[in-house]
Length: 187
Length: 187
DNA sequence: CAGGTCATGTAAAGCGTTACATGATTTT
DNA sequence: AAAATCATGTAACGCTTTACATGACCTG
Image (cartoon, rainbow over all chains, first blue to last red; front, side, top):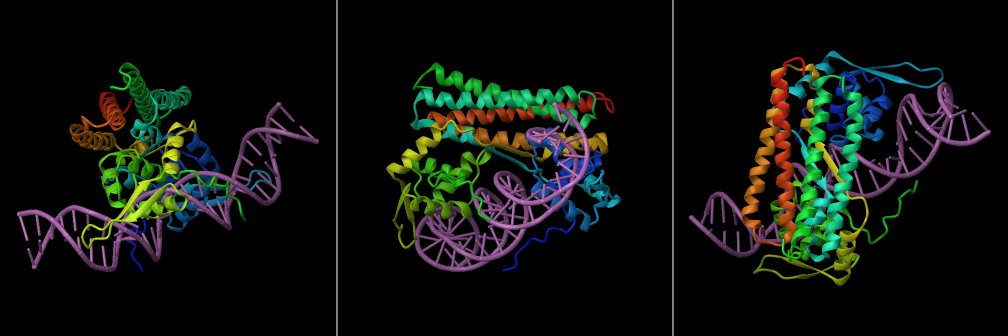
């Protein structure tokens, strides 16, 4: 059929973005990148090995990164570094006026949306479950904060943003619980 | 290789959930479901035609919905209705204690995270862009609110939740702008 | 009669996760 | 000696979007 809108050839894929950024922060291997993603951006931008390793090779093909083998003992290890082109591509993306991706998949909200057919107690259960979930997330974020206190401003500000919005979600779900409890069957 | 964790056969797919819910709210055709999703759950749970039509047929195969042709004039039209089994499956899902999906992809946060290599003014640009984006979303949500004022509590509470959290994001990004502007280069 | 809306669908591609496989080194 | 961690990778699948195709009906 042939349809592609032609991926601009040097356009960064979703995963490519994290990878270049992580390399700029001194992460060296696919493994290290994955570990750090799980400790930092995971809540708003995840990545799996299944994407990271192939994407690293693709980024090398287009010249944004360069690899060399650097085994630690008998353990295979491929170290990647940003090239100048890669650094430029990262900067271009960060400065781009392109509408940034913002996508949410919130099953709690979806359940609440359709909750008119279930009992009040069950409906409250949804709100409680979601409050607990966000509370757990908040606890994890605060854990990170302890370590991020003296890092660079980018991650620090991002963490603050994540904490603020998570707190807001907890409040919003708590309010929902209150509204449900207050006027059973009416509000 | 054969690996599948066996999809429990009657387990609801992500899109199946919206569809059953929408049918329970009286939406009748794939088209109508899509229109309504775009007017309501879109911000926290999207769906495209490419999923809706095939999923409707799958749901009929497993017996959760039943279809019959009901052309309007010479225009083909397939009306779907929930079966008892479908209604039960919907209720089961709504009541399920399963950890609900919650996934965010926020490119603004990712950019802020990696923004340590760009200039302050460009960094502020990210925050302003995100604030504007959420503001636009908030305006759209408030539009919906006007119409949803007298609907059933589920959608109404969900909308309120969406508005609250969007407001919080605007505040959080505004705070980020303030922090960036306040102590340039330091905080 | 043109443009919009109602209505259904498919093909291709891209994105992403999960599960598996493999093996060395390090820690308990 | 076992368990955890470091390290790399692939295959299969599933989900989702995008783009296209088709046609009837409705409104200005």
